[in-house]
Image (tube, rainbow, N blue to C red; front, top):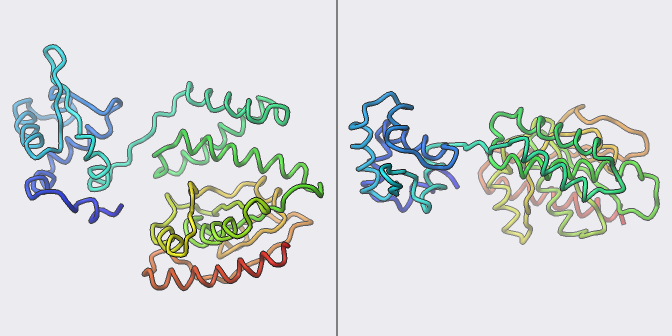
Length: 301
């Protein structure tokens, strides 16, 4: 959702309320509070303001429907109205950080130990989970959904590692890795189209030499127009095991970032980057990639 789209449907009173920097700061604090709520006293302390001043602004926010209050004993807790949380987060550019505690990491490690039981030791799984967390967390803007992304990224890496260790077996599906710079445009277009065409016959992975925050909205829209879903894909860094697992590695604009292993087929596609392009150009790039993927699939078969 763009900031413009997020603002659509808000009344004039709500928009005026958001224009005030103090009220905007109060909303940001409520959105990022550990349990999503705070008292006037807490907000006043965080903003270094007098409580009557915060109470005045809170009254206005409640009147325009952006904030709800709930009394518990002698205290009243305030929170952003549930139906407004996503919209306010977009308008105020709030990137809420998921609480990644040791308990959550141990839960992820335990779940993956059960999933890969008999394939990897718990020590190996713990190393991959912690390393995957570090790889995602070091990109400062990737904080939303960090626990679930860590779990998925670690699972994908472990699956690739297992595939790499049985690379010479003839009864396994072929694996194709698409790599571009941000893993938010070209590689995601190619991967989504190949998954649609090949189904379970081909394992498709993606990676980026400098991953972006999210798959571009224009890319998702261009795929949707031809009946192809990007699914739950997200930009992820290029890792060694993803290359080792692949039978075919397709690079698009990422230079020499990809390590080279013998026995793999390497292709470099000269495809324009759709990032920042108008939708008409994104469609043209999509169709170019579509033709290349279809040709690639005939060689895989």
